[in-house]
Length: 98
Image 1 (cartoon, rainbow, N blue to C red):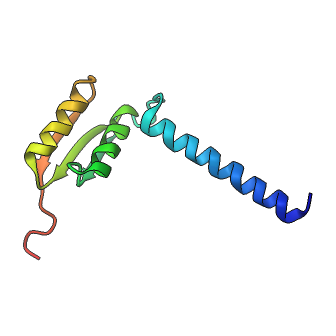
Image 2: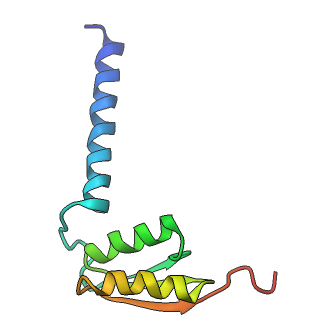
């Protein structure tokens, strides 16, 4: 096998490993890496923000959900809290006054 083929194979393996770690963080088991930490999630009412909030909460962080839609933020907070995890809501419009 040529050096370039070996390097490509190593890159694929590294990428697969990173993907597995990301999937485990988002959907899998928790290692409580963030126990006793606070994560502030801006835009937590959207799909990406709410997914991040759930992931941080599963890892043990208390999450502070921020965004413009209080009703959507409350829904995400209820989802997180229903799993006995900690979440609070703060309505913030980062674009206000600009």
